[in-house]
Image (cartoon, rainbow, N blue to C red; front, side, top):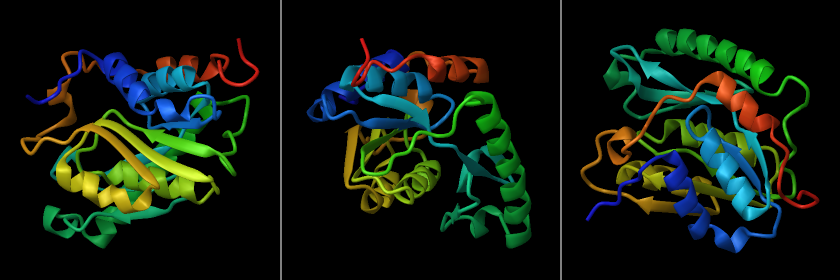
Length: 217
């Protein structure tokens, strides 16, 4: 039977069990906004670590805003999926979409962590979490962004993934933790009973909460 999740909180609790070997190592949990940030808060608290965001945006297909043809991180590094051209995303379109998404990333950084810089992952175990992998594009960009900043170990953690997307990202992490990779995968939301949208205000509030890791209560 294919695993289902009551909510993102339920998925995060199950992921925390699968990642229990990192408890006490003060890992840095980097969540992909917006949906995964509450999951990241749960993971960071359960593992005694810290929470931050890794800001990436998918590059939307010309024909569907939900279908990714690539992704971009805060530095402008871009991943273009092999299917981008067949989806109608030519170089000119990709450049326009990239610039639009970079502006969104700048806005989000200013909104989410206005009082501090991003937490430095250098020399730490970093766990990048999302609520699922569809095309894998945003996770690819997130892993690249995290790896460039020098973690000692890089972990990809998701509750559910399309099998081909899971294999796409696997070489880019030191460890991949995925609870379910069903062949009949159409969208991440199909595996959740509650997949409500997360708002920017919720993300900022979660990131402002004090850590319960080393030195915390």
